[in-house]
Image (tube, rainbow, N blue to C red; front, side):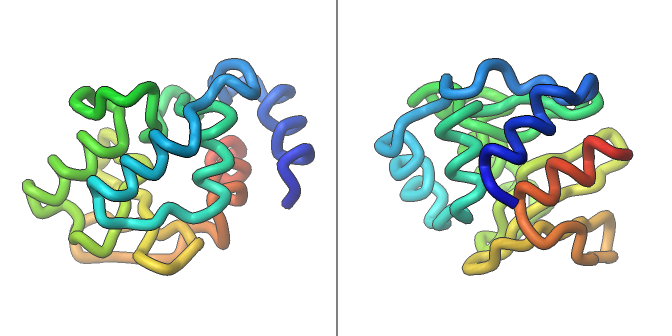
Amino acid sequence: MEVEELKKIIETSSCINFGNFGQGVDNNIITTAENKLNFTFPEEYKIWLKNYSGGEINGEEILGIFNSNFEVWPNTVFANLKMRKDAFITNNELAIQMNDQAEIYFFKKNDDKVYLKWGNIEELYADSFFDFIVKKSSE
């Protein structure tokens, strides 16, 4: 899926609240976040961060980056460091969403796919971050 196609889906969906396109964070902030987490973000996630920085689908927050202050929720650095400390995820995983049912949507290191886990169960959820957005918005 191309960025323009995703942008149209986001702009026309009543359940997606990402703010205005083009008002995300710059590459330096993304690189700093990656370094703090020792995790290279998938390209589609970086594109989303650069253009939206964060937001929610159906009222569920997607972890993003709102500024260089990584010490608040739902900042992806803050949330992932806390989730690693609390053993919800490993250092080889990057959570992008956790909901009230303790379902965690995440990337694995060197993998662009989005996985879902709850308890000891893990499964593939979407083939990419853009697919994740489309699938979550249709639930």
